[in-house]
Image 1 (cartoon, rainbow, N blue to C red):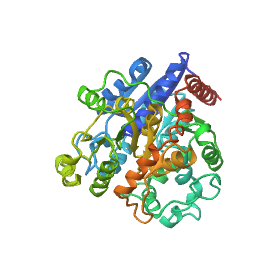
Image 2 (cartoon, helix red, strand yellow; image 1 turned 180 degrees about the vertical axis):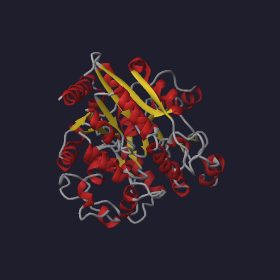
Image 3 (cartoon, rainbow, N blue to C red; image 1 turned 180 degrees about the horizontal axis):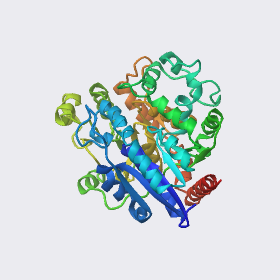
Image 4 (spheres, rainbow, N blue to C red; image 1 turned 90 degrees about the vertical axis):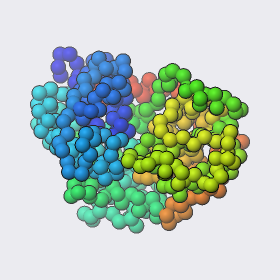
Length: 459
């Protein structure tokens, strides 16, 4: 251990949905004292990462990596925000090409610990000979890792089929609501086991990292995901350290005037806000049903729709907007594309319901803001998060879907909103809102993680 304290290196994948939890963890570690951090990212991301660090910037160095040119990857693309789904696969190839740079940095800096993401299991081969403790940091829920990323999924030595993935793996917690999943979700999960461009699939990358690392770190807690955490620990046979859930800090500044004025024209808890994150996109037909469903609730609503990079946004929005919709909902409905101040909107007194994709950060933001939740997951871990929150923790209403293909209609959307907004549902989120916003609880979780992490690295 260096005289100036513990040195931790972090290497998140080049997606801001991954970089953000690593930054938040870095802030947690340096706030505890006696820890300095070096975070690796592509050069173009460095200014944004430094801005995200805020007061912790003095104790966190952001080291730039140069990405190699990969055929098919747009020139200058250094995060998933700038590429298509296939581009994200090529971005993994570019990250693999940074191995010599990462090896040099490890040899030069010789950190006490390295926290790495799912995409780069090869870092364990570089760090272990230096005596560096290597921990995989999962930015996903424990339930998603437990359902998809355990050795039991490779039973028999071959990848699972969609039929296999419709059932939980061997030994899965019997208390779970996820003994089985619908066919459309199982089909979507096959992505995790699919190789692109001849490269290892997501499952192979994750499992290689888990099996060669010293421990797993997850941004959750026993109170919310105890059975899944215990199952992961049993499957992996190594320590699982818990950072606690990432609770957003109160937003800074004021809500943009045009939205503040519009929202303030409605009574308390009247507005339904719908947003699906920056990298989850509804197909046009699904967006149309969402809009018609919100219209039929007869409640005021604010919808944020985003589209994949390179899409003609105006044309796509026109394609999914029902005929006559704007006229029928004038004054009580907003459909917006692009970024909005989501936390400000969720905390506005007139917003009472949050329709979202069951991304972990979005669900926690909704709970902390005191909103009723309607969950409409569209892919991957979102399906498992929705089951965790709606069925295990009972804090949200899921939009009903057709088992075979996942289709939902306008009545399914309006029914879910009506369910979430019904009398008696207001108490469902109170327990978890109080848990997430209790400073003493969150301090205990943070202190426990920092203590366990430091003791593990020093051992």
